[in-house]
Length: 271
Length: 311
Image (cartoon, rainbow over all chains, first blue to last red; front, side, top):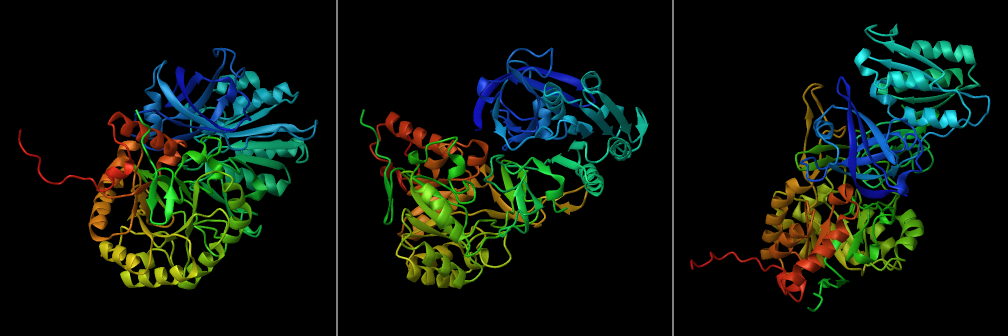
C-alpha cells in the first residue's frame, strides 16, 4: 500500500556527468519494496506542479556505506524537475509517494541465470535487484550499455556486486564499442535461452531491441518501463503503453505503466 | 465556537460539504482509499462513462505546462455496465454523493447511459460531459453549440429523474449561451469549467508533445479564467453552479464560491497530493470558524464589486 510521506534528504551524491544518488530517511512502512517499484517525488513549494517517478535504487542494506534506514534513488539531470532535485542539500525535505507499481520478481527456476541489461541511467533499479538476487543465491550478470563512459553510473559498485559485468559504449570510451545487444546475443547463446532470465531497463529503443532478441530466442524477459506520469497510482491514465490483453475484451489495448507496470513481460507489449 | 455548517444544496442534490472531486482525476474513487476517507467528501464524480468501454488515445497523453498540465486521454473507461456491476457497489459503501459523469458520441449514446444509470442504488446524480476536447465525436461538439447542447440536455432530462448537472466547455464561443441552453432544458445545475484546448510543441522534434496534437489544459494556470467564467454564468442563470479549475487549496475554492459557485470540484490537485480534496474540506471549515462565519452558504456569490469607500 502506498504512503504519502514527507521525509528529509540525508545525502545527494554527485556521481559526475549529471548523475546523482539521492538518499533519504525511509520510514519502516516503505522498507518492503520490490526492485523497480517506484516513488513519485516532488519538492514542496517548488514551481514544478507534478511529481516525477523514480524507481528505487537502494533498499535498506543495498549500499554498505548508507546510513541505517535510508533508501536511494538514482537520477540524471534532464530537465527542470531533476535540476531542482540536484540542488537539494541534506536536511531538505521531499514529498514521497510510494511504493508504487509492480517490480521485478526473482527467477522461478533455481538454475536460472539472471541477466540484467541496463542502458545508461536505466541501471537505476539494478543495485536493489542485484542484492536481492544474491541474497536468494543467484549470481547476477550485468550487461551495461551507454553512449559514453560518463553515462555508466555506479559501474564500480556493479563490478563489486555482480558475478560478471560487460560494458559497451557507443563511442568506445570504455568496454566494447557498440550496443548492449551484441553481448546480449552472445550471452544467450552461451547460457542457453531456457536458463537465461532477462531483466532490462533503459531507453525505449534499447528495450525494444532487447525484447526482440529475447522473444526470438525464447528467453523470459521483463522490462522496467518509463513513462510520463501525472499521478503514479492509476487514475490519470497518462502513462499507458499498448499491450496484448490490455483492451476491453482482452484484446489489444492500453495498460498503465504505474499500476500494471512498470515491470512488464516483453511478450505482453504490443510495440 | 460553533462548528460552521458546510452543507450545501446543488439543486436537488444535498452535499455534506461543497467539495467534490472532478471527473477524470479521481478514477472510480476506490483508487484513493489508501489516502483518504471518502466519507469526508461532499461528493465524488467518477471518470466519464460511455455506453461501451473505450481504449482511449495513443500515448503520449500528458505533458506538464507552466502551472498546469495538458492531457489527451481520450476517455479511456470501463463502460457503464462494468461501472454499475463492479465499481458502484463498492463505492456506495462510502457515505458520499456518487456522481456519474456521462459521455457519448451521439445523443442516443448519452440517453442510453443515462437510462442505465437511472435508479441505480447509491447513485446521487449525473454529470453530462459535453465538453471533452480530446475525442473526435461527441463531447465538445455538443458543448460548443447552444443548440446541440440543448438537444442532448433535453433528451437526457427525459431519460433520468436523477439530479442532472451539465459540465460546460470553456472553449465555446458563446459560453453564457451554452449555460442558458442547459438551464432552459431542465438541467438542475451547471459544472464549470472543463479543460481549455491547448497545444505544446517539442521544438527539437518539430512535433506536438501529445499524440492527439492538442489536449485539455488544467491546473492553477486556468484558475483566473475559470473564476471569471463562474462569475459571468452566476450573473446570467438562476440554477446552482459547481465551480472548478485549478483548485489546489481552500482559498482557491473560496474564490469560486465568492464568484457564485455553490460547490466546487478539485481536479488536477488529486494527482499531486492524493488527499488534496479532504484537505480543502478541513481548511474551509477552519477558515470559516476563524472568521465566525456560520455557514458556507453565506459566501455563495458574496463577491463585493463596488469600490470600497475611502476611510
